[in-house]
Length: 568
Image (cartoon, rainbow, N blue to C red; front, side):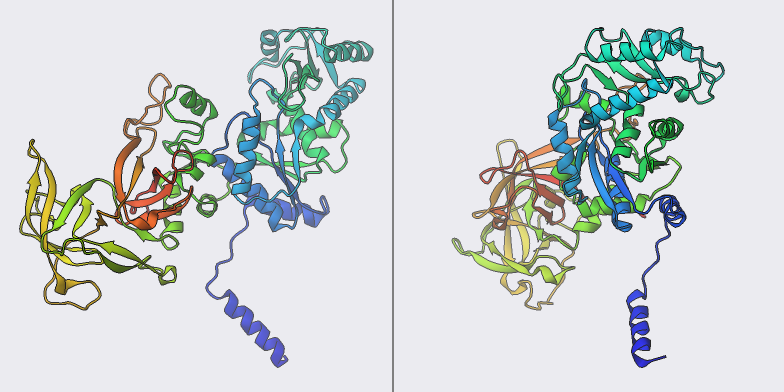
């Protein structure tokens, strides 16, 4: 072996040392088989949301899975709006979905498609099925169709209109398109097998009449394809190889395969199902979120108490934290629930080394240092992150009057309370030792100011070791403080009662949002912009609210607290 080759191999070993090989999931294994057998020569995936609401954390798993597979195999990824139902769809949702997919980092270039752009192709496919004797126009009502369908124990009964001639079906279907019939008067059904053990194959409806304006096609159509008919055609038209969807579509797969086969698409796509992402005590259903929005319980689809992607972004979650969460959850064939604390763990891990630790007092109490020179302002240097020196340092003004947290003073302290109380000495973080010598109270007896003295020999960084103190508290200089509003969030659902009550209504947590006015922040927060995030010393990670914050009136959302009992 040559020295060059030996050196190259040694370098490769060093590069791979300590790294773990990730086992492929079952979808990757199936794709490997398809490529090896020659079934497909490439990989192309898609994310196909219906634009009838904002995306949530479960959709993030689907986005990142589909995009990740395309990226892994050097393929392509499409964003496609499954907009076949004009009763619920809005352009607002179209725009929000695109913003969410882009924010998560899934690259689709110019491959943005709408199912509604394929309506003519879908109509032609339906005509083809009629001509093949595989579809018929049915006059049964929706209730009658359900009745005729049977159940798991009873085979279905054929529609009396099932054996109409091809010519009559073509004529009636064209008249349906021309708007000659009322909503629900007629439907087009696939002709498959009313005795099939799979109820989805019992002559399913593939077109219905709906005299509604569509957000993309306007009033061009008054008949619309059903999802189970439209979706496989969309995939086939776009040359999708692997249609990755959630487990509830597993029973629909025979119909998916039937449609692409009978419509005679070359290289038909293959559907593979994976388990949905369920979070404990978290509201993800569009129906529930829509009601919360409409009832004014939350301030929109992006309310930081929700787990819509827009809400997580507004609260301060990062794409990296969501990607990490999805990786930890993994891909499986079995439905299960994930502790929502895992999501918090991921954002905490992402931020703790990358964000500056800043001084912010959320419930301010005045502290006056009686022996500090009046009018003097001292500039103290503070590290931005004790665990990451690369973030550098900043200076903080220090003066005679400061703000501290209300909880950091007790006139009558409980046992093992090491913060400030009469006669006790603590360190002001990054500054001096101070000793409580008195208080000011209002007419109701409430403490409104704490008086202290300081020891100039105890300045941080000087190496003072004359005595020790057990407590360290943070502070903000009063004369240079920046005012802000801080919002503290808890789970929207009452975790002790569970998600739903006996009537199926949400058990809402009355303390899901606590708004604190007149918080005091260090002056380095001036100029903070929407989505900027920080660690507030001892109080948690916070993000500038993108909706309500202004340069003159800063508003911060608490992303997550500093610590949790959650363990991987």
